[in-house]
Image 1 (spheres, helix red, strand yellow):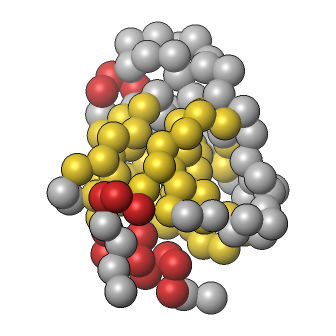
Image 2: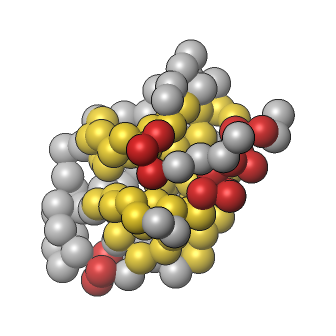
Length: 120
């Protein structure tokens, strides 16, 4: 089994289904060139599993992708350096791209998504 583009949904949600891990914050912007907070964050779903892009409290230029199951249990955290403060998510043949402040972006590959589904 593997993760494919047709398995992904991108939704906007006001808050995560479970706890925000220590050292992280939910920060979504209205667009790449604004510091205005968006009312909801773009979130990647694979079936019932949510992959939330969160920013670090220390303001490093990285996303932490936090995955939750359908009951809001925190499953995994993966750091993706290179962008912060998400404003949109897109998908293509390489995976899901998380777009942030100043249009910096990072990609969570299909293999990384699959690994996050498998590991307890």
